Length: 471
Image (cartoon, helix red, strand yellow):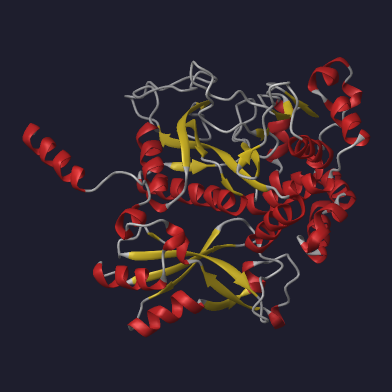
């Protein structure tokens, strides 16, 4: 056994562990430098039989279109030109008519990875969407988040980065050997007191291999014992992404959920991202951290005098002002309201604070070395969204909210009125959170001009969404 272990270590030394992304190690260059020629050579050298075009629909889930390359020219056609698809099915509820629903899937070479779950060797490429005119499809979540990202960069000189905290529950059937945790006591618990540690660590590795930047993973507070109606134990975990430009941050969340679902299925478990599984128990949020980047510098933290940069103030103000409307994208199911009303580290008002976990927005502490050197970027945390969120639409909405907020006396007054310390003394100072879908529909209508600005959100799409919330 010992000699085998040392042999493996010697083999590992021949192939550097870093960079974490497998195909960057294979090609010996960064993803942005990859070409179609690189992918064609990969398919040939590794006998890859399937090329899979994956993309995100209006429901926020990954969709898949598979090909078996018939020849090199066929492979190049797929990689360079993509393929058509039915937009009325992929983007149901957005206003695309069935009679004129052809769209194009546009593969992005830099997104490629080897499918870790396919029994047949398969190369995956993530796709954008184009309409009949060849331009980015307005109803596509990918188009919307990229349009918002580009607008912030053009109009404000800000490249907005984000990361998601993906909370989830795993379920396993009970057995006589079980001795796992207790409610509210699972935070950072270690094996053998949690059963999901192995799956979580596998997920971290898989995500790094396919190109999703990861910060860390750990077990969370939630624990639900078996009951008469459900003979499974549920325990909660979290995977936090690494900061990435907005479109990549959105895709990172979707891929993380996809990986976790696949691993749970392989392990005979169930994975859930529902905002609430059982009343009285911790729910699953999907908090997002934001870091506006200006001239290569992260601008979410206070300066030496204690002041926040103007772009950070605008982001906080936009979240506080439009947070209720953003629930249309970030809190999409009835269980969202249960999570919020329970108050288990969920927001209770439209307030912002330094470290207040019950505020809508908070400014988390930043890790630093003993001599004061920060080892991670400061962020602004938006704590309202949950596991039902559509990350692409939510992140686009957050960007639009930031862009709509102008510096000046009005912003000063808004931030003063909604500071969490003040709100605790005078709760009527800040707007309350919506408690029903119809309330979100009203707030969405009020924020439509903000969301539609710059042509980011299609008006017809927001109209249909508001009607659905009213119903």
